[in-house]
Image (cartoon, rainbow, N blue to C red; front, side, top):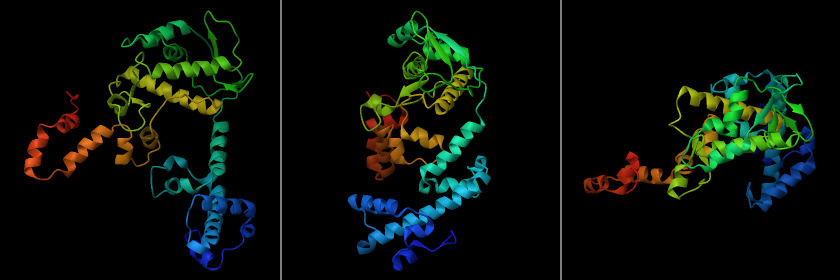
Length: 317
């Protein structure tokens, strides 16, 4: 109704208009209805087909309105829930991917540096592999990440060039190894950096507590190391942001294994206790034990229990 259009309830009561009235492909709507039926979804019992069709038409109408107004919206105001950008963010899950990708691709094109030349970097990969194998030894400068950080930190990485298969943001030569970079060596350098960042050689990312405790989900993921807070570490993290942006431009993302809670915080979305349990289930259980403990006797017993150590951050044992 707030769209200035018939509500889904009214459409369903009237048997739902044909999708083609609003330039919606009836075959697509029919496929969507079939998909929902296979999932066992119920949209009004006997009228489920009409209900789903009505909702699909409403979504298409919403899509057409958003597509027409989106170029006029300042997305920098997305943190303000009352702004146009904030309201768009609130309904982003209801928008089709094609509309969002159109804006995304336009932003990439408009911020692209049109110059053809890209940086050329020589990397000593053998030394980097040795640093990764040396557990507990931190010498980030010898890693592939450290070498590329030294060579590319001051460059905006807004350029890309097509050579061979795919796009490249820099051209790589591995010292002592033959081969010209037609995209493969560039992609290999990105994989090497991801391995460096998730090793003790750099220390910038650490395994989630669930990994250390062998419990819960997302045990194979990493989080930024909270101990890395020096000005140099901040420069490292800013450079990682550049690498992520460059990966979006070249379709070669930096393959870091990050948990869902990281991306939620990155996008400014609300984080739940379930998200927190996805990285530290043991701590969440301990806090829940404290929260649900009420009798005085139970509190006295809790003080000397392993739960107290977990909440206080003391290692077990």
